[in-house]
Length: 335
Image (cartoon, rainbow, N blue to C red):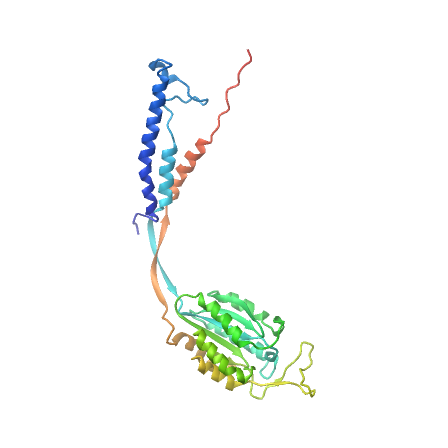
């Protein structure tokens, strides 16, 4: 398609100064010519050298008005010939919140809760049609692994590094982790904003009321994927032993589905327990895509123009270079 226009037509107002510049230049040259007629006959003036480059006064013209003209036209951005490009905006954004506390190393689900969580995230990212996703890992302190992005390959490459040893301070501060997710989602424009929590629910039940209030204050939807079994298992130490209580018995970590279900319900989301089928992944993606706040995928056509500013930029550069051209003076023979 062909249609001529300027990308920044406001620059064309500066062309009003071009005639003024030309009038000023002509008047100055005429004034210099009248001054020279006081010292030489008029028929000799066309041959009079006025500089060391051999240019006569009659043939010497200022290039600055032309430089101004070409420079303004280039800045205005002339363009024509365009093609239509269809663009779209994904429906919403979500942050995956991954629990990296030591209890996620329990092997009550093979090979471990954390490995199972990584597999679930991989399935979700690979099946994601149009959501922008981010990744935050947390224990006592949240860590932003990846901001909200459309680059699913980067998220997949980061998953193998998600281990409980990645965080130095152990514990489970879910409130601070949710606040960090809200900061990431706050910069996203349009669409729904959700958080997907992958955890075993190992936080005190007394914190549930505080968490519910925090979620309402943050105005986010929280979906939860539970990891582990109600029977649970002992928590391994980095050295291969078991964490033990004061009586010397291994500390048993169990999936606290009651905590997770109440948390998801309080935040307007859904709860699913992770399994080896695709049902949990499909249910979570459907919840993210069909929640009332999620907008539909929007598309529109965008004109991709062929910019032609270089047409005026080339003569501008050539004229500018000519102003700096130096010609060595002729050698003077000694008398």
